[in-house]
Length: 84
Image (tube, rainbow, N blue to C red; front, top):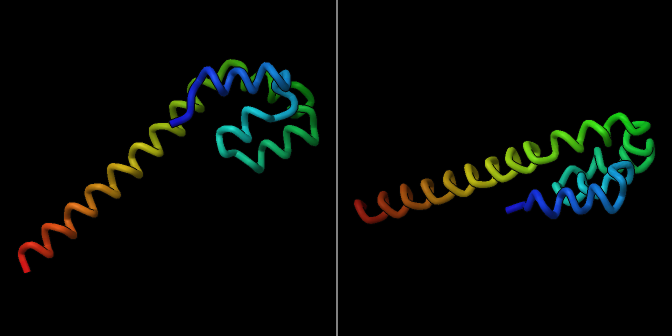
């Protein structure tokens, strides 16, 4: 699980323009883009300041859903084996 506090810490360390927060969130492509364009000339960095919390929530939700699907699938396979 990703932490909002850590994501904002990376944002503040790089002033948002270095894309460190994007690398932390696993967004490697946009992290490189942020580094090369200084956070899309500052506009992207400013935007991220206000949306970073929801970006972290979305990534954590996606990870949780993936874990739920994995557990559900594992349980279904185990149940099928028990029935056979």
